[in-house]
Image (cartoon, helix red, strand yellow):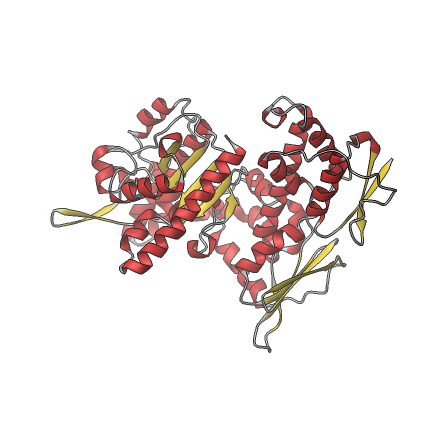
Length: 478
Ligand code: URA
């Protein structure tokens, strides 16, 4: 029996090296005992035999799967991965076999790791511990389900690169100082004092909490209870839920006494918000139903609804903001100047538009008439929210493997986060049902860049994001 002791940092790389060696030596899965938590990697915890075999090439899909699953908490993860790797030599298509139990189990583990990383990004709360130095210092405590502090560190370094911080978890502590990440063993919860951000989070949460829209189950599945104890704003939740019904009644009662213009808008929105209707079962049904949409006032002035188009089984969904002037007239998304620029850069990036489902976060053109021209206006949060119903219906039908969100409106609708798109572009986030979303800028932004050099640079960056999408699809959904 060969014993392989893997370190608890850089575990995925150590597993990969060890698995490669074991495979070259033709050591079968039941001849390996995997251990985790060694100070450093020790492939030869028991005596090695000189390697004789050649190298086996494995697909990118397996490499990515292994990279994620190595961070899972289940002790059997390394053995499961090695058993699948062993099979890959003879069963080359097993990775795409949806009925294979071993692959399905590993995919489920991969998903659980990604979900945990997503929750860490969404629910980790920094508290300031020192504001006296040249860089402000923060600390956070988080209790993940898996060993995800290390693979998540780069995200926090990018997002909070202008401050020093420590993220402590039970099995790993990440230090970020002067732009450098360092990993240390886990630790118990540090004594984190309340700070001003605590009150800010709670106030923000109280303000965005809408009692009339409360769905307790959905809220608890998006923000599971186990995270509450480390989130300042969560202390307000029981109170807000308990008072929701009364507050909603109070809001209804108070509505007619609001200023007339606002009251009229609210009444109109209430009358337009349909009770939950069943989602359409086909793209053509969706098109027909959307043509009669009155979920928000935008249908009044637009020529027609513009829904998405593309293959029903498209692995990639591309989401823009809303149809523009030409799209509104043609009834098709992305056919005007922004669409033509997108087509050119997509082609250069090796991304085939015809194989993608191309759509928008909002399905009607919003504009302000100026003389003979119709000037584009950004849809507001209520319009985006109202139209999310249609985007979700399209997602349910297409079931894309990856979504490319172009611009802040698409990003907001898909991830629920309105944070600055400039900082997030080129990164992957997730929808609430865990579909990966690659964020990029909207092509119309490129059309507005005034100087030629800046424009070329912006196009290059946009093309790089499209290449990322094309590569992801080639690796994961081809
Ligand atoms: N801009 C968009 O976001 N979508 C279109 O369809 C056209 C321009």
